[in-house]
Amino acid sequence: MKQLLTLTALLVMWSGYAADPAPKVGTPVANVGIVSVDQKFVFLPAKEGGIEAIELATGKVVWTNKAGAKLAGASDKLVFAWTGEAKKANEFRLFAMDVTTGKTVGKSDPIAMPGWATTAKVHGRTFRTAAKTDGEGAVVVWEAGAFYAGGAAPTPEIIAAAKKNANGVAKIDFKSGKVTNENRKPKEDEFSSSPSGALHLMAAGYEFRVSEQLPGLKPGALSKVTLTVLKDTKPVWTRELAGNPFSPPPP
Image (cartoon, rainbow, N blue to C red; front, side):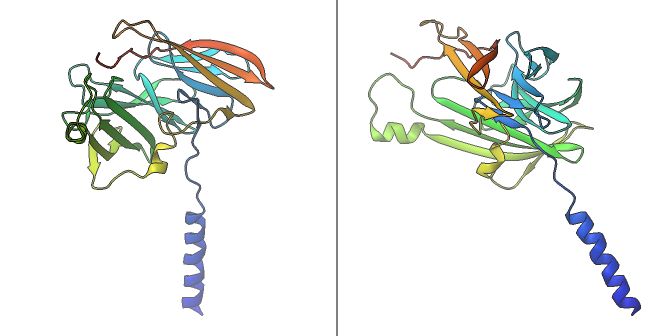
């Protein structure tokens, strides 16, 4: 009887542990932002740089943080953003911000990719990343690609030689900033928490529309990106976001 009671107690403890819910995540919208878990705010790349939290109902700016440049994910407690390293195009850092105040609460060491990869949005290169809460740190997945971007019509051999792909998974300890690479490939659904890995145009009863105006033919100039938020098909507010550098294909 004593053994039966002990086994029952263990099963109760285990069922309680297993029922512990995973951290809730925000909803990526229009490939640029993330709607908060409570559906009251949307996190966006600010026009002047950094990340901003906007009240969905009014368009009011609640907080701005200049640390990260692009969003990677959000939970009910943290907002994750990344920024490329100025001197190494193949490296980036992850920042964790308090979802309520916008205060930076964590920063990773550089996360390195192969030498040919770049986080910059340029013709011939692709990059995406996503992050989710993992205890006191985060799990980051990334993927980089390359394709032929020359001007002349290439041969199949040239196309094949130019094509590259790499990906990775890293765990971040925000107490130390340490990055530990995991020996596995990221799963496709792990990118779904990031604007770069999921496309939703509706969330929290609102519709999100993004327009981008190119800056002409000047390479490196920033495009004009505008987000319009609608409710019942009627515009509620509009805001200009961080632009993308224009990188045309070679002539």
